[in-house]
Length: 476
Ligand SMILES: *Cc1c(COP(=O)(O)O)cnc(C)c1O
Image (cartoon, rainbow, N blue to C red):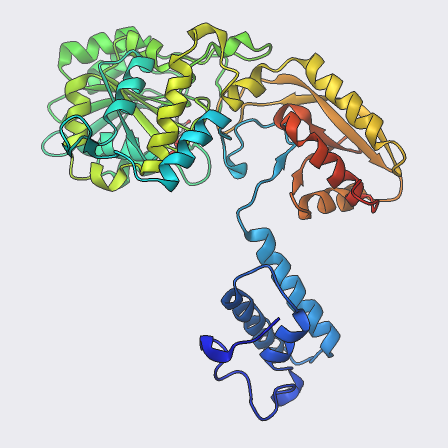
């Protein structure tokens, strides 16, 4: 590795007179950089990492020898390598895995996305007049069609959609939002409905109890300061037993009679009949909910819809228009990449019959993939992996939609099970996780499992290489 001293990052730390050793036995940054050779990071990142590690050593009383110092630096660089955003192979069986980036996009969507990314486009330019045009007009029309609503708008995510809705409807002299106590939920990390409500400046008016809320409860709560009735879909948990909540149709009618807007936060926004996959319950679609008389729905773009991260709002045209005119909307709007990916995703759905599912959307495809297909892949993998110091078996998997969607639904799946004879399960899992690309699975019943439902068939050859490597065998 060559070491230009011009970048300024070295000055002050590298002693020109004694580059090898500085005070107190800690090697100089430059010497460590030389010993590292070339690293797969921008140079300032490496220099900074080395410097931090040396500073840490300096603060410790026990000064290690050079080899140990190098070892510490290499470990620090390895932590950086693992912290980089990179593709991983998802063997968890959780289809919409929030920690693993939620919905992967299919090739059609990626093509559109890539074009929007690398070339100029007509994002806000009207090609028919040659003048400034409306941003996102076409994609909004597509989404409105999909949701069977009069209009739609796209913002950064569903949380943003909620904040926008709450701010708009509860500003001024109608600050209250009515919500059932059974729906004051937490969705994922750091997303609590009561906190979002508060952050939006809305005043929370809780009605009913955790398990029971009646139409009368809502009716009694509506008053001169009511700005909005909000219903939150229980997307990440379910309640059973002594439970009651009014039918959406009845709540819509009440809201209409009292002239109060009624919004439902759906969370996941499935566009296909989810129950067509065995083991999966029915998830109400935005169109279905709007059909029950709700004024607006909002949902995420990257859950069951299987698109990019976004929050979609659909429903009454006058309300959508008003939301888009909020000055705050500007702070929540999506960029061209998201809009392009969303346009392509919406078109994929519109181009196909509604009930048939959609094989071009990976999330939907994974959900509907047959166990026979998965089993055939598992058999092939096991055949190729023979000879490694482990027992390989075809196992039972319980795939889930995840991402806080359909908590009750378990999709029976097929796993590749590994019972290593020389490695611990923990060691195997660590090696798979720390390689390139990382492979993420889980331990259950004294075996390491990889659910094939969430692994793309195209990834099987890479998976084989990574498994072989993890057992210390050459990749192929
Ligand atoms: C997931 C979820 C959200 C948050 O969606 P993001 O797009 O992650 O902001 C909000 N409400 C419900 C009901 C959800 O399930």
